[in-house]
Picture 1 (cartoon, one colour):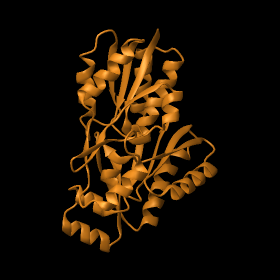
Picture 2: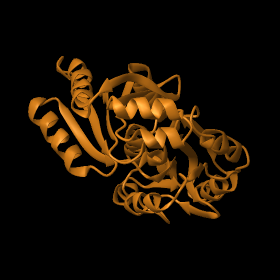
Picture 3: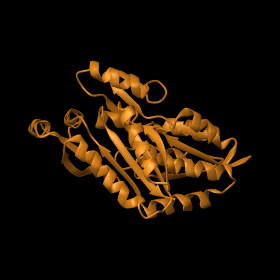
Length: 282
C-alpha cells in the first residue's frame, strides 16, 4: 500500500501528462454557459473556452466541485493509500476548500488533510508538484505538510496583468464609468493575491509599462541569487509568454521557469490577453 495520495483541483492547471507522471488526482471545477455546464480540463479546454466566450452575450458562471466529487475521488484513493493530501485554490475566491474539507470528514480508511494554497494557477500547482514528489519519495503527510507550510511562510508571489477590462466589468468588478475611463486611458490593472483574495496591486497606463512593472517586481526577488522556481502564465498570448520566459531565463541563471496557462475558470475573470508571473524561493 502506498502511503500518501495527492489531490488537487483543476485550477492548478497542471497538464495531464504531469498529473500522470506525479500520480496526482485532479477534481475539476465547472464553467456554466446558460443551462450548459462543462468540467474544465475535461469537457472544455482553454482554447475552446475563449472561442465560446466570443459567441456569448454574457460571461459564464463558475462553480466549485461538489462534495460528492471529492468523496468519490477520496474513496477510490482510500483503497490504496493511508493518507490523502488535497491542495486547493484559495478559499478566498472559491468554496472548493470547504467542499474538500466536508468530503474528507465522510471518508473511512484514510486520513484526509486539506491544504489551502491561498493562491491559484501554477502557483497552486507548485505546491502540488512539491507534495507529489515527496509522496513518491516516501515521505509521510506530516513531513509533506510541513514543507508546504514552509513554502507559504517564505512567501509565494503572483501578479496578473489584465489586458481586457470588459471581463472585469462583465464580472461585476468594474462599473460602466470605470470601464469607459479605463479604456480611454489604456489602463492595464496589475492584480495580486492578498489575504486569500485577488486584489488590485497597481493601475498602470499601457501594456508595455505594466509588463515592465512585472519585470521589476521579479528582478527584486531574483537579483539576490536565491534559487527560484517561477511560472509565466498566458491566456491567448502564448508567444508573448514564451518570449518573457526566454528573457527571464537568459537574465537569471538561478531561476527555473514553467510555462503555464489560464484555464476556463480563472480566465472567466481575467479575460483574453492576460499574463501572469509568479514565483517562490526554493
